[in-house]
Length: 148
Image (cartoon, rainbow, N blue to C red; front, side):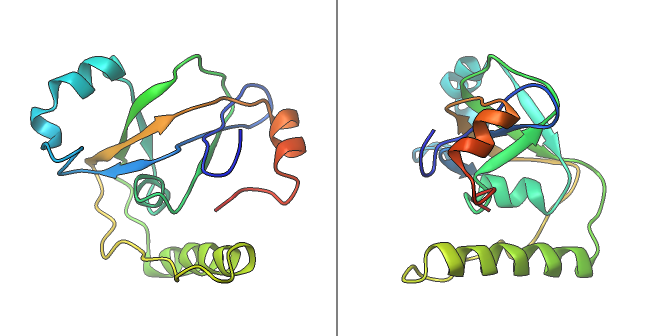
């Protein structure tokens, strides 16, 4: 795994994620709803996540996701937001953490553009899973921690 590459794994809290996110609405110029090739290629696989993390993953701000189970899935993965509504303080804290990490790791890059809304109980878009790492492999590959 390298910069911008997803990771995932098995064991005590492994890491999954995306190399590139795609918001609901379009995928390579086509609407997600009409992208049968994308749905077929994904096998219909979908991961449900709480907000604000679901939107941050789809928007490419969050690049890695941890899970306690291993997956052989690679390729397109739909991301859905659960019905749980985040409160404003939670959103502000997560955005502040992401912004601080971004500023520390990419000081010359433009500031992050956070989503204007965090919809719940909705299919948001998807990500492209490129790899799956055990917690041990992840920690040795990313000693500074998550990229988000």
